[in-house]
Image (cartoon, rainbow, N blue to C red; front, side):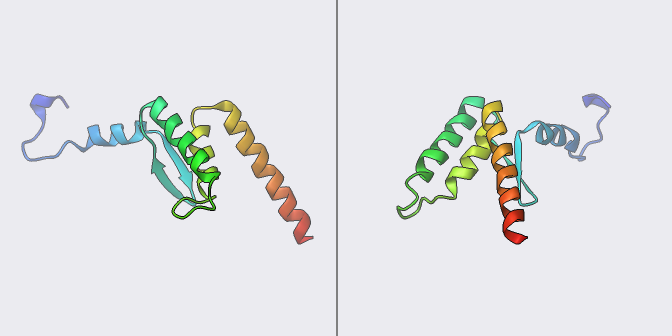
Length: 100
């Protein structure tokens, strides 16, 4: 359906749905969080989160920022993605040993 054939008054949701699908996202705790489209901005946000997370003893910032920053960086970096996967496996195995 071309632009001339659209009915007046009907919103064009197809275009916004496609734009939403192309946004980079991360999924945490069953929710999708949109990331910036710009790769340098994503890397910057991830780096800032990790760096601020290392001073988590200060008010406002916290240690929770380190894993969040690693998740954001993993979107663009295979090394960080591999590290996240290995760390997750290691943590799961540790938890299983503690339970048994």
